[in-house]
Image 1 (cartoon, rainbow, N blue to C red):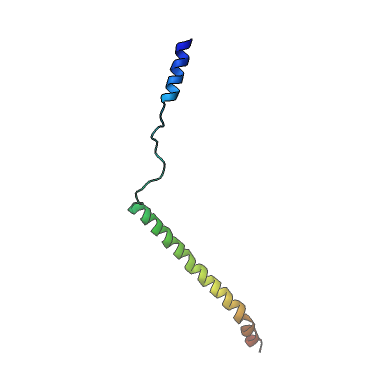
Image 2: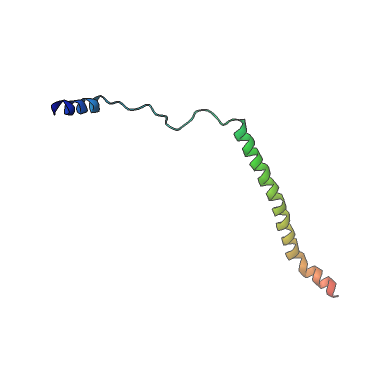
Length: 74
């Protein structure tokens, strides 16, 4: 009975930490990552241009409608 306890204690005392990866990488993203981000930026700009045109058109409609309606009623 004494041998297994001594073996366990000796194993626990002499155990060292494992050299696992920390998860952080030192290298920078590759060309595919930058190409993907560029493609996302093109899609974003492609969506912003029509949205801005629609907001400008709605603003013009709000501002110019009373004047245009008054001109049509005369």
